Length: 471
Image (cartoon, rainbow, N blue to C red):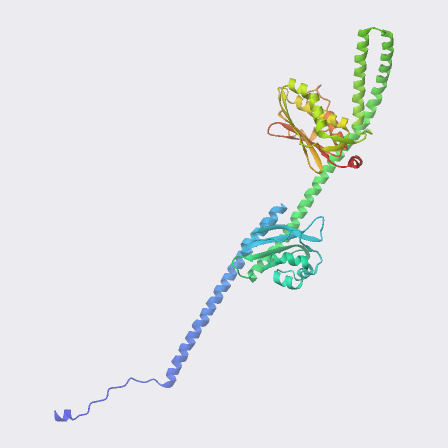
């Protein structure tokens, strides 16, 4: 035991130590791992951003594809512009936009044709001038440009006023076959962020699509107008040929009828001398003489149908003229149980015309209305006037006219009445008189019956002479 007591205690064993090179390697490996993790995170962020951009591009391309297909099917000009602007606003998240297009009467001015969104827009009287430094610069670059860049360096005084209402924003040139056909301006992103490259690319492609669609719509409108004008010219040619044939026939009829009428009139004068004081015989002669005058009047009317007389134009108080005709017909209207309603303006609009000819038109239309209401009804006569024209309408509660017959009612010898009750010349004569006054006469069916409408110009006496030359 003494030996054990005198024995020194053993030292505690210390932990094993690593070589210096080994520790350095582990630290380096740790640093590399951290760097790899950071690089991986950066790559993941870049891939996420790229994926987001790709999704945006795919969505933009799909949107442009759908829009292009819709654009090609929309030929209505106003609808096309609305669709374009609203699509652009929704896609880039902006709050307002406007499109500027050249005017037909001033092709060198790009004016605000359509605007949508909230906020204040530029004065509609402001415009972009074709050939200006701004438009020349935009045409040469052919890409969307920030409003700030154009305001600072290229915009003129009036152009700055327009652009400042859309600042900050983008100005998109609308190009068709290397020509500037319009300007699209969009502003105020709702996220309060700047327009990104994706927005710029989308608007650039969309601008190209709308340029083609606008040109297609214009071509369609022009073709539609040309077709309408061609159809009108064809109808006018047919009407002219019929009028020429009627005029030739009228001259022959007048010659053949007037000669025997003159002879009959001369013999009536001889008969009047022979009968002397025989009152009954004189009455018979007077009746025959009146009927001969009526026949002569009919022949003269037939001649005057397409060979207008030399009556002088005079100021005509239309309300008074219509009222005088209605007073003449009031007794017959009341006898046929037809209610008469007048709707006249408080002032007395005046036109230049031939009162007797206009009376003939009014009487003819009223008589037609009476014939179409054999069991009674209602006739409303209304007069409305504007700065340039005067309108008289006759609306009845009759059965109306079959739609397929309406285009023919003003043709000579066309009638919807039973045989023996109409010659088919009444409305043709009315048509000729109104045309010689520089106006128009039309008919349409309504929910309650039929309605004739006469429009006459409110202008100088020279209007009629010009129209006579056109006819």
